[in-house]
Image (cartoon, rainbow, N blue to C red; front, top):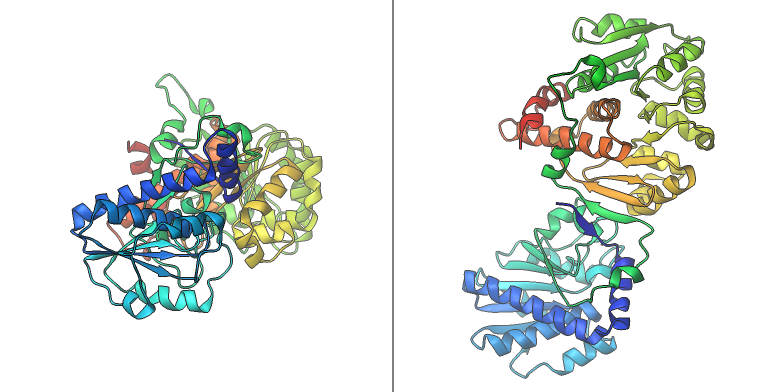
Length: 509
């Protein structure tokens, strides 16, 4: 089932909307603390806890912890309830008010007592919550890191402290939580690795924000997370009363004298995901090398330039072939010569079919990205983080930490669909972004991007819209890698192995 994800700013807007709709921020903190307390009681009953330690910051996340600590002591008198003030005394009005209501039998502990933990203890992380970004201070990281080695149960409040709620990056020293409770809606960063790993099991708790809050929130980009069943249901349906033309014609413009494997992988991925006709247009050397291994393809052998890349003399023929196809993929292994730069630009301006631009196609496009303003078809870009940095004129660290803003800007400015691929992928299209997080380390090797491009092209050729093509392709490839890694080491698996595993994934569910 699709889940709505909120950015930190959207959550803040929802809280302000609540006040306008009759439920104050103070009431929301009381509700959050009560919900957190109920979760702790549930865990306490199952684990026979003796002590619960709240790590509280100075802001409203710490205030939630103060409310929960007070209620927990009232409900479970036998529990030792302790608070460690991780950043000193509370500073916001709400957190100060919550702190003032603590009873004397709640112990405010020092660092030496905090570090003496056992398996009958629980740590509740209420230091920063959703507003954190950047790095943890040295003193915070210094006491959090040893806690990761303890066998106490670790519960995050709204977000583990050190996790960026927007982009899913994680600061050094962040606590690995067994479970994280978050309020109202799941946050975007929680669905993105590595943050997803640090959150552990995620529970969304209601804090009483009234209906009608959505009309107060700036949804210029709506983030949702798709699950396996939803994506499997999107796969193209097949009828016994059909023929190869029923399932589309894909043109793959791939390969060069020096990059033969990219063409082989992308074409096999398209063939094994249902496309009716796969035409691989590639240099003659590439066709000669792989035709015997993929006899089901139609081949268009191409002449090359002095760099071993597709000659610019082939551009007119490729434009004609593209417009006779249902969908087009360009870029996998084409190299970066003057000829391929001209090829990519000419295709953008003249092709009228949905077109995926990947790998070297993206690298060539980055040299003149404004050519996208002249496009005559739906364009899907599939950059990894390095290619995203090149497209946006930034560097890799900036692209990692500002991924959502970078992608939104490119989508808004150039009216494209952008599938930002990573351990967690996000597909941006207009005002919507869909998060998918299938796969494992088996995909962390050459050929995965070529495989994904071939599957997206196959889905487009079979009639899926551009967004559904991207997210179903991510599911097919990622879930196949997961299934294979259940029986084999992910280190040993290759793109060819994973393509062979498509059969099981397409049959599953």
